Structures are given as structure tokens and as C-alpha cells.
Length: 462
Ligand SMILES: Cc1cc2nc3c(=O)[nH]c(=O)nc-3n(C[C@H](O)[C@H](O)[C@H](O)COP(=O)(O)OP(=O)(O)OC[C@H]3O[C@@H](n4cnc5c(N)ncnc54)[C@H](O)[C@@H]3O)c2cc1C
Image (cartoon, rainbow, N blue to C red; front, top):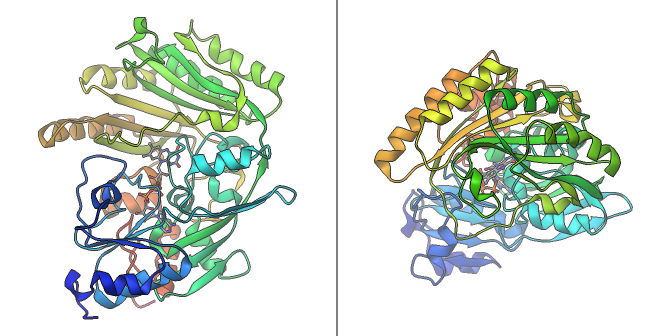
């Protein structure tokens, strides 16, 4: 094997001899399918895609990247909106075949391999009346979401995904396979709870499971005015912490779930999830139903996995987005939201508001690398675009929108960042969090082998 960053430094037969898993090159069947990411607009052509079969394969692929200098992309669920899970001319280490899941229902823990999606894990755990919280989409990989933090339907009741992480198996840049928890490599355990893919490849996680049986949840479509948006947020903030809400303020898409009379009108497409007693759940969602006559009300007692909408693997939207935290959404802020949404003609445009707090906020800010524990509301603004020229227009719109909404909290959530540069990554890891991550990076990945991510470079001279 030659060294350098030239794909001819390593041959497919050689790679195949190194791993148990499948090596896919540009001439192989399934290459295009294997290199496709969830978001459209990315068209990288990796030299090799290795669908690893175990942690030893992971170590071998890391070894090849280390020795050849080829760029290494780590792919789990493929949802990176920065396109980080593929590479032009490098190696994709694809975890999607690592699907083992061992649930210990009595101990309420699960060992899960990181090729699982949130939906797959959630469905299997629900068979025991148990759950670990991930995000709002079943197709997201458990690896990417957990390493960044994990904000979802159970955040107020059970915290972030990382607050349920007990242990991980991580393959480092040197190829060591480490068991990482509070006692073993505690620095690394701190860093992987929010620090993303900077420190190694996580192959397995041990999660705490929570009792989550039937929930009161589902979608509520309300007409959106500034007043209704502000009152929705007020209700969400004062709701019991069993209730987590996600409010998508947007023009109603012409989809079957949305009644025809609402198509194109401003709506709140709300996702509500009350993880607790059914009657108390009905009481908790009543104030949201009373905000206005809903266009559609699908909130009902349901099994937790039903919160995830069905996935469409052929759907690859092109979108631009900005993420931030705000301290409050009063009438003035809600008016700004409505004005910006009304001023755009993007076919899909949205302001997503997630009221935080509860269990997530009780964890000290420096306990993990997710530092935004006291942030009140996460806001994501996004627009779909069609082609490069339209992208410029939509990008200007999301930038202006984000700027108009910005308040005192200038943090950002790493898992919703696009390719926005170091300044944005620093805002995801403010102050001492950045310094500590950079020190730990210098210890475990001094050459920045894992750099195709929201990158924290190793501290100088550490
Ligand atoms: C439709 C959609 C809905 C979303 N909803 C939510 C939500 O509700 N809450 C939320 O918190 N986030 C949400 N996200 C963001 C999501 O958490 C991130 O995009 C996450 O990185 C996706 O993980 P993945 O494994 O699917 O992606 P990938 O693109 O496969 O991975 C993204 C990056 O994560 C790193 N990575 C992934 N797996 C590993 C691993 N095992 N070891 C080391 N590094 C790894 C790599 O750096 C990789 O480039 C959503 C994203 C989308 C597209």
C-alpha cells in the first residue's frame, strides 16, 4: 500500500482482503445507491464504500485511511445536512450493516449497534413498553444523533439522547477498540456526548431504556397567526414536562394529511408527545386544541413508535437551514416569524420551534459536550430550493430570517448545522467546551483523521 491521498494507493482486492464486510467501488452494482445521502444536492463520488461488518473492520478501514491519507467519511443514517457522510475520492466507512440490538428489559438497558436507525431501535424497544429518546424522524441514524446530543419527543421528560447513554464502544484514530463510560476513558465519554464524530467511530452504544408505553401524541394542524403561535409557545412552556412539542410554522403543504381547505395557508403543524398517564395526557394537550379550531387533529393515545412518520427512501430534498436558540417567542417575535414566512415564495419554508427545558435542563452545562442545557427554545428555519440560483435566494432568506430572530443566546445545536464554517461550530461548543474538546481531540486524534464533520481541530501543542 502506497501512502498519499491518491485512491490508487489502495486496490479494491486489497481492501476486500482486509475486511469481512462489503467493499463497493465505482464500477460495482449498487454504487450509486450506496453513495446517495438523504439530502439532495450532494453528489460526491467516493473511491470506496466499505459496509463494515464489525468493529475490527472499522479499525481496518481507519488504518487504510491513516496510512494512505485518503479522506475518511463516516456514514450512519446519512442525514448530515452538511454532506459530511460522503467524500469525493475518499473512503466512506458505512455502518449501515451494524444492526445488532440486545435489549435487557429487566435491567432497562440496550446495547445497540450504530447502523440502526432511530425508528428500528424504537420499534424493537416498544415491544417491551420501553424507549430511549432520539429525534423526530425514524430514519435518522442512532450514531449521528446521539453523538451530537439528540433532541426529540422525550427531551423534556427523559432528557437528550446522550442523557440515556451509559457506555459506548469507540474505535479511535489509532485503531484501538475502546469501551468508554464514566470510569473508562471518562474524558472521551464526556466528549462523545455532544462532540459529534470528532473522536472516533462509535460502533455500539449501551442506552438506558425508559418505561414509555402508550403515549398521547400525534399531529395537530392549527391555523397560524402571530397570536396563535405566541400562545402555542406559552402553553408549551407551561405544560407538564411529560409533554414535549415541536411546532412547525409553515404554509400547509398539499399533502393528504392536510385538509384541502388549508393547503397553502399558514399553519402550525405541531407534533405533540405526552409520555405519561393517558388521562393526564389528554388534559395536557387540551389547551393546544383550544387555541383555534384545528384543521386536523390526529392527537390520540398511540404507541410511541407511531410518532415517527413513514419514511420515503426516494425523497431527497434540497434545503438550506439555520439553527439557533431563542429565549422567548412573544407576540412581537411571532409577528416576525409570520412576516418572514409570508415574504418568501419557496415551495416549502418553515420555522420550527422546539420548547426545551425539563429533564434536559437539569443536567449541568459542563457534564457533557452539549453545553446548551439552559437554552429555552430551539428554532430552525429552513427553505427548500431548486438549483444553484434558487439556492442563493433561499440562503439569503434563511440568513435574514435567522438574523431577525436572534436574541441573547448565540449558541447553536451541532446536529442542525450545515456546512457553515468554524465560527458556527464554535457556537455549538462555546467557551471552555471548545477548549476541552480540542484537548481531548489532541489526545485521541492528533492528526485530525476524523475531520469530515463539524470539526474541532486538535489543540496546538497538547
Ligand atoms: C429529516 C431530519 C430530521 C432530524 N431530526 C432531528 C431531531 O429531531 N433531533 C435531532 O437531535 N436531530 C435531528 N436531525 C439531525 C440529525 O441528528 C443529524 O443530521 C445527525 O448527524 C444524523 O445522523 P445520521 O447517522 O443519520 O447521519 P450521517 O450523515 O450518517 O452522519 C452524520 C455525521 O455524524 C457522524 N457520525 C455518524 N455516525 C457516527 C458513528 N457511529 N461514529 C462516529 N461518527 C458518526 C459523522 O461525522 C457523520 O458525518 C434530523 C435530521 C434530518 C435530516
